[in-house]
Length: 132
Image (cartoon, rainbow, N blue to C red; front, side, top):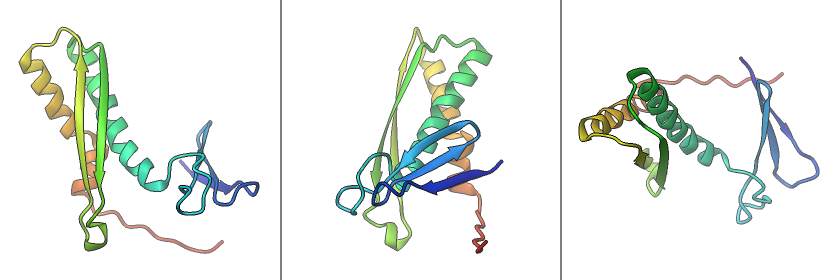
């Protein structure tokens, strides 16, 4: 699978990301000189783990017949020490449905094991960059 990012030359910093049949804008904030027409790359990073947690819980609940009717995740970023190598995300899970406490705790455990969470915290990622 390839992801393609192209520049929208009509805007100072706006990019268009193409993933399979989907596309969406990425942009810098107004303070950075962008138009704030979309999330910035850090927002996408944070959103990836949040969405993965939600999808993983929904998948698990369906598989285990847990009556999860809705899920909302609020993620707060603390990047105050990013330059020192520490990037903190705090996620709060809001779960709806006729859930017992043990089911809520199971969903919490599943959220903490979602693939992107594991990727961000336990895997060494190697990125190579080259010129075309």
